[in-house]
Image (cartoon, rainbow, N blue to C red; front, side, top):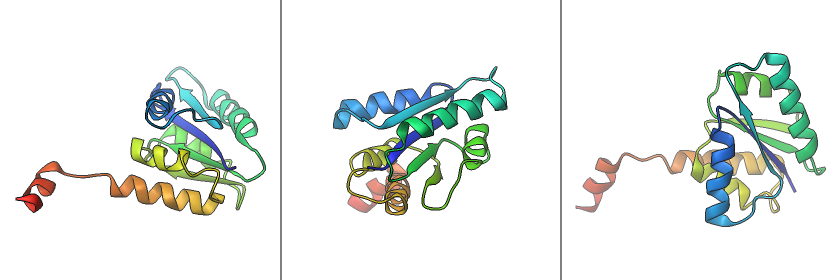
Length: 134
């Protein structure tokens, strides 16, 4: 099972896990890390490292972040390791649902690809969808 760590600004990580659990049930192995404005880089790095250790079940850890280039992503990138830790930025609810429902069946690289594809696929502009149906 691939471990999942979500690192975001504010309480977004925790909230995404709560909503995902309402939709698909328990997300054991998904660990949210919330980053508050008053926290320093060293403290954030300790929180991320602790979450990685807690999430790791031997098949690697996928870290999901909210914004590439932001502090959660930048700190997470320092833990990037080939075949052990991957970082996927731009988390959204469809991405997390896909990942949470496939973390038992996929290896780390495949799970990251599935999550990226689901996240992209589920971004839509309603007016474009409505035009196609008319």
